[in-house]
Length: 195
Image 1 (spheres, rainbow, N blue to C red):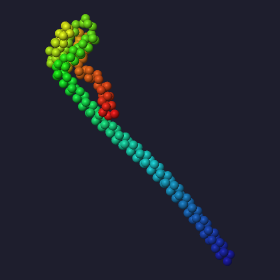
Image 2: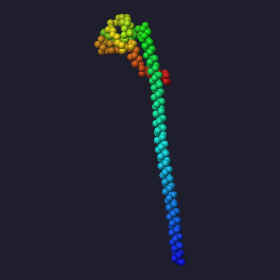
Image 3: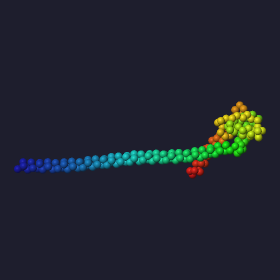
């Protein structure tokens, strides 16, 4: 009997150890699974955070692009409107040039202004548009000025005054004066039209 009791005791001990080992294995399995779940959660959160950052960046870039495009279109519209105003001004200048009696007074003023820039002793050459030749002759005669007169197609309205050697040249045309005013006009028109 003692042998049977010994066998029984050994089997019970083995059974208890087996139970302890299985219980320990179950605890370790739960611990490993929990660690895996925790790591998966951290990885998932990291991935979601990274994906959210990428999305936010792409969204911000897209919004910036839309904003830049809107600003570009507004600037184009403003520039178009300013160009229309400039075209209207140039049309009015052409009308002034074509109205010869009023233009003669303006031409005389342009010539007198240009003469102030040259020494009175200098012999001068006056260049004008072919259509302004008669007005120029009349103004020169009225001022008692002895000047060489030339016609030049590139001068629309106004004159170019220079010494005979053309070392000094003064361009005093509607277009040259208008070109000098463009930056100031552009700013003022922008303020008036767009606030």
